[in-house]
Each structure stands twice: as structure tokens, then as C-alpha cells.
Image 1 (cartoon, one colour):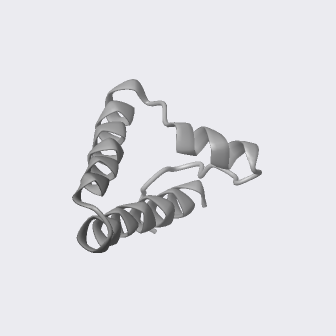
Image 2 (image 1 turned 120 degrees about the vertical axis):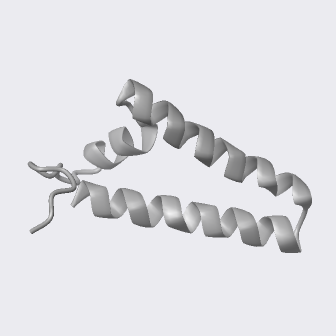
Length: 69
């Protein structure tokens, strides 16, 4: 369940940053860059702030990760 919430939230943030870049100010592209850098960092460190926040909000971690059912 955590994986699903994580993907939805990150997807919304990326789409929101693109919309803000196009319609508000090109500097919002830095928000997209931040999201990408955070995803890369979390791949190497196995730590992500969003995951920590979601766990503290009571979202349960999956037992098997991204396995196909």
C-alpha cells in the first residue's frame, strides 16, 4: 500500500511542477529537478522523506515490494 501512495503522490508532484512551470513561472522547473534528485538519492541510500512521512501517518509497508501477483 505504501508503494501505491508513494507513486501517486510523486506523480502528482511531477505533473503539478510541470503545470506550474508552463503557466506560472519557468523557475518551477527546479521543483521537478528536486523530485528527480530525491528519487535518485533514495535509490542509493534506501531512505526517502516521503516514505518516512507516510509511515508516520499510518500507511502500512508491503511485505514483498514490487512483486507481480
